[in-house]
Image (cartoon, rainbow, N blue to C red):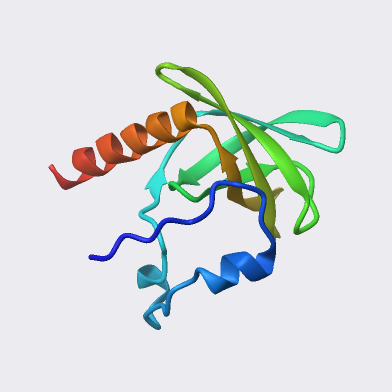
Length: 134
């Protein structure tokens, strides 16, 4: 398995696409990073507004959550995620905003992640993956 490191800084969609790899055709095999189900406290800030969201899943490069309102694609957002060791802030860009029953499914690609936040995120995902394979 080849590890690919994506920039953890603000970047353009073109830069993201340049670092992409050719993905297999099956949707379940297209992920660039393993995703785990998660139900951590999550707060989203965008355009001077701040609100709680329901986290659905999480990876080292992004997350999916349910939110009561749509957020336009490519909107820059700040995310507050609460792990066991505290709350960490992430910065990202909305890459999908789709209606889902009585809420909106929002997908965010991380563009800025501090070293501490990255360690907490990786530890959480590694622990969750180990628990599901045991």
